[in-house]
Length: 241
Image 1 (cartoon, one colour):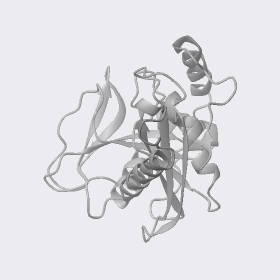
Image 2: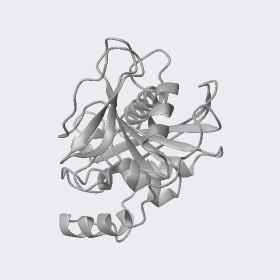
Image 3: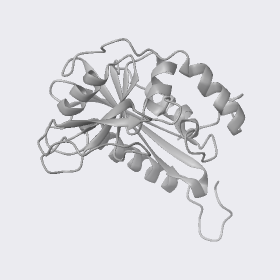
Image 4: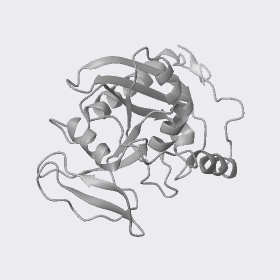
Protein backbone atom coordinates (compact mmCIF):
# COMPACT_ATOMS: atom_id res chain seq x y z
CA UNK A 1 0.00 0.00 0.00
CA UNK A 2 1.27 3.45 -0.93
CA UNK A 3 1.22 6.16 1.72
CA UNK A 4 0.22 9.55 0.29
CA UNK A 5 2.86 12.04 1.36
CA UNK A 6 2.15 15.68 2.16
CA UNK A 7 2.29 17.70 -1.09
CA UNK A 8 5.20 20.07 -1.60
CA UNK A 9 4.20 23.58 -0.59
CA UNK A 10 1.25 22.45 1.54
CA UNK A 11 0.51 24.99 4.31
CA UNK A 12 2.45 24.11 7.45
CA UNK A 13 1.31 26.87 9.83
CA UNK A 14 -1.89 28.65 10.77
CA UNK A 15 -1.02 31.97 9.10
CA UNK A 16 -0.37 30.35 5.71
CA UNK A 17 -3.46 28.16 5.96
CA UNK A 18 -5.67 31.14 6.76
CA UNK A 19 -4.34 32.97 3.71
CA UNK A 20 -5.09 29.96 1.49
CA UNK A 21 -8.54 29.63 3.01
CA UNK A 22 -9.32 33.30 2.27
CA UNK A 23 -8.11 32.94 -1.31
CA UNK A 24 -10.20 29.83 -1.97
CA UNK A 25 -13.28 31.25 -0.24
CA UNK A 26 -13.35 34.04 -2.83
CA UNK A 27 -14.02 31.33 -5.46
CA UNK A 28 -17.04 29.89 -3.66
CA UNK A 29 -20.22 29.65 -5.79
CA UNK A 30 -23.44 30.14 -3.84
CA UNK A 31 -25.96 31.04 -6.57
CA UNK A 32 -26.52 27.62 -8.18
CA UNK A 33 -29.36 25.24 -7.36
CA UNK A 34 -27.19 22.17 -7.86
CA UNK A 35 -28.19 18.72 -9.13
CA UNK A 36 -31.74 17.51 -8.37
CA UNK A 37 -32.06 15.13 -5.43
CA UNK A 38 -32.36 11.51 -6.54
CA UNK A 39 -30.59 11.94 -9.87
CA UNK A 40 -27.09 10.98 -10.97
CA UNK A 41 -24.43 10.03 -8.45
CA UNK A 42 -23.67 11.14 -4.90
CA UNK A 43 -20.33 10.45 -3.25
CA UNK A 44 -19.80 10.13 0.48
CA UNK A 45 -16.45 11.22 1.92
CA UNK A 46 -15.06 10.48 5.36
CA UNK A 47 -11.73 10.01 7.14
CA UNK A 48 -10.31 8.06 10.07
CA UNK A 49 -7.17 9.09 11.96
CA UNK A 50 -4.35 7.43 13.81
CA UNK A 51 -2.58 10.44 15.33
CA UNK A 52 -0.04 8.25 17.10
CA UNK A 53 1.28 7.01 13.76
CA UNK A 54 0.55 10.25 11.89
CA UNK A 55 -1.85 8.56 9.44
CA UNK A 56 -5.23 9.43 7.96
CA UNK A 57 -7.36 7.09 5.86
CA UNK A 58 -9.91 8.56 3.46
CA UNK A 59 -12.84 6.86 1.75
CA UNK A 60 -14.91 7.93 -1.24
CA UNK A 61 -18.07 5.91 -1.90
CA UNK A 62 -20.17 6.61 -4.99
CA UNK A 63 -23.88 5.80 -4.73
CA UNK A 64 -26.62 5.81 -7.32
CA UNK A 65 -28.70 8.75 -6.12
CA UNK A 66 -31.98 7.06 -7.02
CA UNK A 67 -31.45 3.55 -5.63
CA UNK A 68 -28.69 4.34 -3.08
CA UNK A 69 -26.81 1.28 -4.30
CA UNK A 70 -23.00 1.44 -4.18
CA UNK A 71 -21.53 2.13 -7.63
CA UNK A 72 -17.85 2.34 -6.71
CA UNK A 73 -15.62 2.88 -3.71
CA UNK A 74 -12.01 3.97 -3.23
CA UNK A 75 -9.64 4.59 -0.34
CA UNK A 76 -6.31 6.28 0.24
CA UNK A 77 -4.00 6.44 3.25
CA UNK A 78 -1.71 9.40 3.82
CA UNK A 79 0.27 11.41 6.30
CA UNK A 80 -1.68 13.86 8.44
CA UNK A 81 -0.88 17.08 6.63
CA UNK A 82 -1.54 19.79 9.23
CA UNK A 83 -1.66 20.20 13.02
CA UNK A 84 -5.01 20.24 14.81
CA UNK A 85 -6.37 23.79 14.63
CA UNK A 86 -10.14 24.39 15.01
CA UNK A 87 -11.50 25.94 11.83
CA UNK A 88 -8.63 24.57 9.74
CA UNK A 89 -9.36 20.86 9.99
CA UNK A 90 -9.70 20.52 6.21
CA UNK A 91 -5.96 21.06 5.85
CA UNK A 92 -5.30 17.88 7.87
CA UNK A 93 -7.00 15.55 5.43
CA UNK A 94 -7.65 17.09 2.01
CA UNK A 95 -4.59 15.62 0.21
CA UNK A 96 -5.68 12.10 1.19
CA UNK A 97 -9.35 12.75 0.42
CA UNK A 98 -8.41 14.06 -3.02
CA UNK A 99 -6.29 10.96 -3.62
CA UNK A 100 -9.30 8.75 -2.86
CA UNK A 101 -11.50 10.83 -5.17
CA UNK A 102 -8.91 10.69 -7.93
CA UNK A 103 -8.92 6.88 -7.73
CA UNK A 104 -12.56 6.70 -8.78
CA UNK A 105 -13.49 5.86 -12.36
CA UNK A 106 -17.18 6.76 -11.96
CA UNK A 107 -18.39 10.36 -12.01
CA UNK A 108 -18.64 11.33 -8.33
CA UNK A 109 -21.54 13.72 -8.88
CA UNK A 110 -22.48 15.56 -5.67
CA UNK A 111 -19.92 15.37 -2.85
CA UNK A 112 -21.39 14.75 0.62
CA UNK A 113 -18.99 15.47 3.48
CA UNK A 114 -19.27 14.38 7.09
CA UNK A 115 -18.75 17.94 8.31
CA UNK A 116 -19.47 21.55 7.48
CA UNK A 117 -19.61 23.93 4.54
CA UNK A 118 -20.79 27.48 5.18
CA UNK A 119 -21.53 26.52 8.80
CA UNK A 120 -17.97 27.43 9.73
CA UNK A 121 -16.43 30.38 11.61
CA UNK A 122 -15.12 31.81 8.32
CA UNK A 123 -17.86 30.27 6.14
CA UNK A 124 -15.47 27.81 4.53
CA UNK A 125 -15.55 24.32 6.02
CA UNK A 126 -14.41 21.05 4.48
CA UNK A 127 -17.38 20.73 2.11
CA UNK A 128 -16.75 24.20 0.69
CA UNK A 129 -12.99 23.63 0.50
CA UNK A 130 -13.38 20.36 -1.42
CA UNK A 131 -16.08 21.80 -3.64
CA UNK A 132 -13.89 24.70 -4.72
CA UNK A 133 -10.81 22.53 -5.26
CA UNK A 134 -12.69 19.96 -7.37
CA UNK A 135 -15.23 22.31 -8.97
CA UNK A 136 -17.99 19.89 -7.92
CA UNK A 137 -21.25 20.61 -6.10
CA UNK A 138 -20.89 19.72 -2.43
CA UNK A 139 -22.77 19.72 0.85
CA UNK A 140 -21.84 19.21 4.47
CA UNK A 141 -23.95 17.04 6.78
CA UNK A 142 -22.64 17.18 10.34
CA UNK A 143 -23.61 15.23 13.43
CA UNK A 144 -23.31 18.26 15.75
CA UNK A 145 -24.11 21.99 15.36
CA UNK A 146 -20.56 23.22 16.08
CA UNK A 147 -20.96 26.59 17.84
CA UNK A 148 -24.07 27.80 16.05
CA UNK A 149 -27.48 28.56 17.57
CA UNK A 150 -30.66 26.79 16.52
CA UNK A 151 -34.09 25.88 17.79
CA UNK A 152 -35.20 22.28 17.75
CA UNK A 153 -37.05 21.52 14.51
CA UNK A 154 -40.45 19.88 14.70
CA UNK A 155 -40.58 16.19 15.64
CA UNK A 156 -41.48 14.82 12.18
CA UNK A 157 -39.09 13.63 9.50
CA UNK A 158 -38.35 16.56 7.18
CA UNK A 159 -38.87 19.26 9.79
CA UNK A 160 -36.12 21.90 9.78
CA UNK A 161 -34.96 24.98 11.65
CA UNK A 162 -32.29 27.60 10.82
CA UNK A 163 -28.70 27.21 11.99
CA UNK A 164 -27.70 30.77 12.86
CA UNK A 165 -24.46 32.74 13.22
CA UNK A 166 -24.97 36.36 14.26
CA UNK A 167 -28.42 36.28 12.72
CA UNK A 168 -27.24 34.78 9.40
CA UNK A 169 -28.64 31.42 8.31
CA UNK A 170 -25.55 29.30 7.65
CA UNK A 171 -27.35 25.96 7.51
CA UNK A 172 -30.33 24.04 8.82
CA UNK A 173 -31.04 21.49 11.48
CA UNK A 174 -32.85 18.71 9.62
CA UNK A 175 -34.90 15.98 11.28
CA UNK A 176 -34.18 12.85 9.24
CA UNK A 177 -35.96 10.44 11.62
CA UNK A 178 -39.06 11.18 13.68
CA UNK A 179 -38.14 11.73 17.30
CA UNK A 180 -34.37 11.43 16.65
CA UNK A 181 -31.93 14.34 17.04
CA UNK A 182 -31.39 16.29 13.80
CA UNK A 183 -28.37 16.49 11.55
CA UNK A 184 -26.87 19.83 10.56
CA UNK A 185 -26.82 20.61 6.86
CA UNK A 186 -24.88 23.40 5.17
CA UNK A 187 -24.05 24.38 1.62
CA UNK A 188 -20.60 23.50 0.42
CA UNK A 189 -20.32 24.76 -3.18
CA UNK A 190 -22.63 25.11 -6.19
CA UNK A 191 -25.76 23.93 -4.29
CA UNK A 192 -28.63 25.81 -2.67
CA UNK A 193 -29.50 25.24 0.99
CA UNK A 194 -32.92 23.90 0.01
CA UNK A 195 -31.20 21.51 -2.39
CA UNK A 196 -28.72 20.40 0.26
CA UNK A 197 -31.60 19.60 2.62
CA UNK A 198 -33.49 17.73 -0.13
CA UNK A 199 -30.41 15.60 -0.86
CA UNK A 200 -29.98 14.89 2.86
CA UNK A 201 -33.54 13.63 3.19
CA UNK A 202 -33.21 11.54 0.04
CA UNK A 203 -30.07 9.94 1.51
CA UNK A 204 -31.67 9.07 4.86
CA UNK A 205 -34.54 6.65 4.13
CA UNK A 206 -33.85 4.50 7.23
CA UNK A 207 -31.27 6.04 9.51
CA UNK A 208 -30.37 9.42 11.00
CA UNK A 209 -27.16 9.77 8.96
CA UNK A 210 -26.97 9.74 5.15
CA UNK A 211 -26.16 6.45 3.46
CA UNK A 212 -23.16 8.20 1.90
CA UNK A 213 -21.72 8.91 5.34
CA UNK A 214 -22.53 5.47 6.69
CA UNK A 215 -20.73 3.72 3.82
CA UNK A 216 -17.73 6.08 3.83
CA UNK A 217 -17.32 5.91 7.61
CA UNK A 218 -17.22 2.11 7.59
CA UNK A 219 -14.84 1.99 4.63
CA UNK A 220 -12.28 4.50 5.94
CA UNK A 221 -12.16 2.71 9.29
CA UNK A 222 -11.44 -0.58 7.52
CA UNK A 223 -8.80 1.09 5.37
CA UNK A 224 -7.04 2.50 8.42
CA UNK A 225 -7.16 -0.84 10.21
CA UNK A 226 -5.70 -2.58 7.15
CA UNK A 227 -2.96 0.05 6.85
CA UNK A 228 -1.99 -0.30 10.50
CA UNK A 229 -1.90 -4.08 10.18
CA UNK A 230 0.20 -3.93 7.04
CA UNK A 231 2.73 -1.59 8.64
CA UNK A 232 2.76 -3.06 12.13
CA UNK A 233 6.19 -3.63 13.64
CA UNK A 234 7.15 -7.07 15.02
CA UNK A 235 7.42 -7.29 18.81
CA UNK A 236 10.51 -5.50 20.07
CA UNK A 237 11.24 -3.82 16.74
CA UNK A 238 11.40 -0.04 16.21
CA UNK A 239 8.12 1.51 15.16
CA UNK A 240 7.32 1.25 11.47
CA UNK A 241 6.31 4.88 11.42
